[in-house]
Length: 238
Image (tube, rainbow, N blue to C red; front, side, top):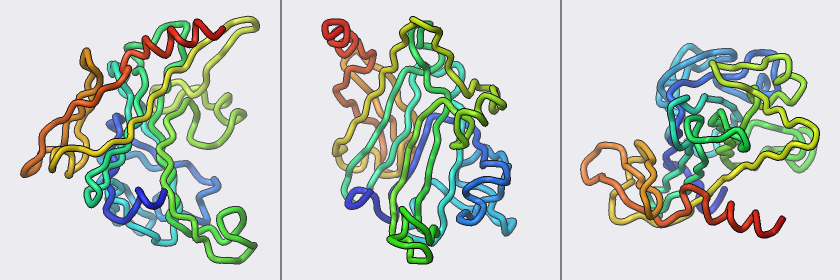
């Protein structure tokens, strides 16, 4: 949210294809995106009008709230989502083990979800009262295991979405771990000013590669990318 999130921020995720929620859904009265649509370019999302919208670029408070989901690629060792604020030279990055790196004892997040809350909800809790103005401007990069944001019952009846599982089963007495990291940092000069192309693991942390444009490149950030230290700490606390 504010003050980090503002018009002109750039969104990128590890997913390579996307889907909007089929109708009927809670976004029917609030959204601008076509319902039940699939697309492969975040900058060319189908609108209900038949036109396209660039979801990579945060538009500001436009009076619409939408939701999309995209599967983390099955071969990805790292799943991630990012928001870059070029005017601040700052990055917000979420990262977690991808499907190819998780173990049976771990929960692997299968989807990059984006909840784009840019207004359009004249009811509580987004508006202060029923019929009031929605003044809530925020973005949820909600990496998850679920079928859209439709709840457990819907996910159980739709066990697979775009080829990825929508539920995790934990048997009685079984334990599973979920490791999840967030990084908030400034980036050097213009290395990430056009957004994030990919995120790779290195011995010392994360290598964030900027989208190709004049002056862009890549930057390394220190992080427990394999979650070894936090796993050790969790073991000591049990």
